[in-house]
Each structure stands twice: as structure tokens, then as C-alpha cells.
Amino acid sequence: MTVHLEVIATGPLALIEDLGRPGLASQGVSRSGAADRRSFQLGARLVAQDYTAAGIEVTFGGLAVRAHGDVMLALTGAPAPATVDGRPVAHASPFTLLHGQCLRLEPPAAGLRTYVSVRGGIDVPPVLGSRATDTLSGLGPPPLRPGDSLPIGSPPPTWPNVDIAPTRALANDPITVQLIPGPRTDWLADIRQLATKWTVSHRSDRIGIRLDGQPLRRHPCRIDQELPSEGVVRGAIQVPADGNPILFLADHPVTGGYPVVAVVRDAEVDLVAQAVPGQRILMSFARH
Amino acid sequence: MKARLLPCGEQGVLLEVDTIEEVLAWHGAVQVAISAGEAAFADVVDVVPAARTLLFVVRDGGSLADVRAALHTLPVPDRPSRTANGDDATIVEVPTRYDGPDLDHVADLTGLTPVEVVRAHTGTPWQVAFCGFAPGFAYLVGGDPRLRVPRRREPRTSVPAGAVGLAGEFSAVYPRSSPGGWQLIGRTEVTVWHTEREPPALMRPGMLVRFAEAG
Image 1 (cartoon, helix red, strand yellow):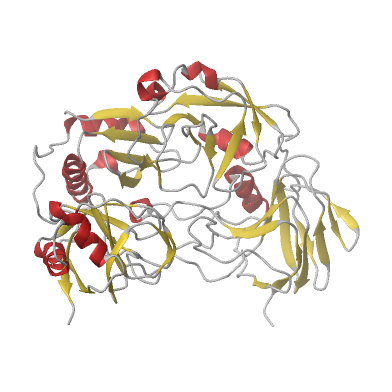
Image 2: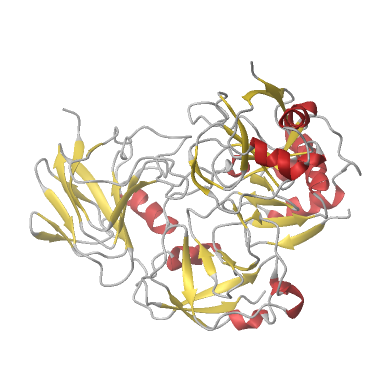
């Protein structure tokens, strides 16, 4: 039997992710991939492999996996308390899950998404060059379920040379992010209205985060206008007619039918992807 | 350059024009430049046409400045040619059985007979303007203008893969079963989306598509 991880429990949502499928947007496919790319990449570095290998994106803890064969792992992103057969293991530090041992993740005290990076990568068949689950288009493997067996690929020739990596605390409330004006700033009465505190709605997922707050007012000339759909990017803030903004994450649609008034700086989209419902986001416009 | 360049984050720039025909002209010109190995576009990973815009996205760490500069000097024809200018110059043939549940309704809306609707739909080639809604869902334009019909008031909860529909100025083939509000006039056996095929979408921006009545 080849080396694999047996899924015992998944928590609210556990997905196989890598860095997605860039280059297919003109055919109607978004990039998808890990919602918090930096944490995913850190995990890959900790187990000494390149970024093409797939790992597990665990939403709000609850994952339990048993090793069949020895597997080297690292946990990054939201610091979910983790145990191996009941003994705690460190965050952002590579460790080996020995044959028969069980890794369990509790819900994190801060942050939303924990990455389980696996040396050798999770070797399910790629779809269009990626093993990422795209929750919008349905491409890639289905969400993990108890009983799944996840094959592990061949380990790379390189070996880990870091015991533990420093990571940024995720507990900040509010999260502060910087915005760049988007293509449709003139659709709002006053774009500065966006530079304030917003609350992450519980109606948020990998497609986008809905922001609760004082609804944004449309420019009087644009009240009854409709924008023809246009291409959108990860981090784009789109404002529907009701004035409640939506911030697009990894599985965003290729095009959107509402004006994009600002775009979050790319590195800070990773922070936003760790925001839990109820958490606040303080937005400001970047100085050039 | 009559187009406007609008900011779209650290990795994107949105080019805006006034008509879908201009989008196609720009898309064709960009495809030519990319095929010729134009260095300014080397960092571009996605070119996403839409109804009035083209979105350019560069790779992580790529340079937008070169793309913006190149777009300012790119030779773009004033009027788009009605020839295939996608990444594949062939014309996609779509044999279609015109037995869709909305064919009679489309005939009523357009004042044509069902037979005339079919003739209009097959009479002139369509062109892929852009993809969206679902992987491989291509918005086709440039068909017979008499076929402009509104969407259904009540969208269907499930439209089968291969359904051929009309909505507004567009026609399309549903790549897979999904909800949908288009007026369905026929169906085809052609697989318009296949993840094991390279490229997976049969109809890509700029390509010409001709429907034919299947016997």
C-alpha cells in the first residue's frame, strides 16, 4: 500500500488546494487555489518542496487524519491547536506523522484557514494542471469526507533546513488593509466612504467576503445604471446596487456585473482570507 | 488610442472601449502581438475580454508598466474584421437539432416562423466575444440581428449540457448542466467544454462559430 493519509474528520470544510490554474480566465475559469497564498507557500518551504505540490486547506479546524506510512507535515496559516495522538505539535514547524499516528486540529483562536503541507504533496489527479478545488466552478477534487484516502506523492530530493518559521499573529482586530483605487471609483458618490471599518459578514466564503457597514452611496448619475460585466481580479471590491461591498477571494467569478471601486493590495488579500465572520477590517487608501 | 486604461490593482489593468466590436478588434491585435512574442506582454498570464473591456493580468511579480506602455502604441484596426482572430483560425461547426422548448416563443417574439428562426441562426457565422458564467460558456455575437430576444422571465433551474440558447444580442451553447435563463431553441451533441482537452474550451474569444441544422 502506498503512503497515504486517511481522513477521519474534516471540520466545517477541508479542501485540497495548490496555487490554482492561472491562464484560463479567457475560457471562463478563475485561478482558484489556496485562499491565503503566503501561508500555503510558507508550508511548502517548511517541508522543502516547491509550490506545485498540493496540501489541505482546513477551514476553522476540525480535521483529523491518520498516516499510513510516515509522512512529513507542516501547519501554517491560522494557528489551530494541533495534536499527534494527543501530544501537542508546534505551528509552522515541520514534523513527521509516523505510520498509524493521528493528527487532529482544533478550531483556531485566531484566523480561519490552516494549511496542512505534506512533503511529496497530495497526489490526486490534477484537473487542468492543478489539484485545487474551485468551489465556484466545481473544478478539482470534491471537498474531503471522512473515509477518503489521500495518496502522497514522491518526496522531493531537497530536505527541510528550518525547524520553525516566525509568522505574523492573526489576532489583530481590526485587520488593516490598504486599497488601490479600482476602475469604477466614479460610480460612488464618495470613494472615501470606503476607507473605514467594515465587519466580515457570516455570508462569506472562498468566492468572496461580504462586508457589513454603512452602505456605500452610488453617484447620483449612476443610480439606475447597469455596468456591462467585466473581468475582475482577486482582491477586487465590487459594490452591488444595495451598497454592501463584496471583496473577491480565490474562487471569484471571472467577470462581475457590479462596479469594482477598489482593489486590496495583493499581499493583504492573504490577511483578509484569514478573517472570521464578525471580525473587523479597517480599510485605507495606499499612499503612492 | 481611443481606448481608456483603468487601474485594477497591482497585477491588473482594464482597457475600456465603447462597443463589443472594438473589444474584438483589440483582442485580435493583442493576440497577434502575443503570438509574435512581443516582450511587453511576456508577463501577461490572462487576457479577459468582456462586453466593453479587456482585463490584463500579469503574473505574480510581473510588470504592468510595460503592458500599459505597449497598449498605448499597439496597432489596432478601426473596424474589426469578420474573420477568426482567436488563437485558432478554424471555424467551429456546431450541428444543432432545433427542437428547443422556447423555439416557438422566440418565433413569436421575433415575428418569424420557427423555420425562419433556424435559418437566421444558421445563416451567418457568430463570433466568440468572451467567456464567462461557467467554464467554457462562450458569448457569441454578430449573428442575425432579428434574433435579439429578452431572457426568460423565469430562469430554468436546470438547463441540459448542449442546449443552444439566445439572450439579448448573444447566442451560446451550455457547456454543462446548470441553471439558466436563456431562450432555448435547440441542442447539440458537440462537447463545448472538456477538461481532458487542450485547450478545454471549444469556443475561445475571437473564434468564429457556425451553427448547422442537424438532420
